[in-house]
Image (cartoon, rainbow, N blue to C red):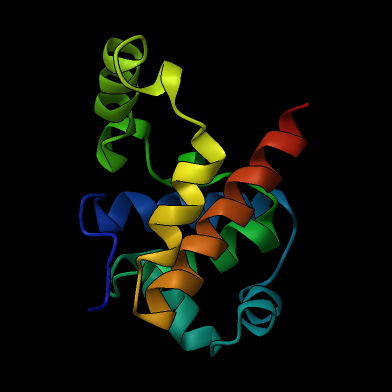
Length: 134
């Protein structure tokens, strides 16, 4: 299963990518080299002709030193709904549970190694975003 960032408008995502690249004074060739694609592929990303996979988006976030929210607002990721639900259920469910143990147990239940790698990459991107904002 290949998760593509289809919730976000490819054209808007491409414009944001181009804007951040230019802000950092990077050429398409330089950025393409950093993320392991041809500059032609990067052109397709920037023009909205190609959809960006979540793994590629994470690479872009790392290279451009931005959080995933730079490209995709919380509402597109469904995070605002998740945050609201967590806040609503916190006293009932989460207050009595050790969140770290729950996360570890849930992670252990994932069988697909590719999905595990994607989860780890996402967690790393979140941690990098948190440390950048502190």
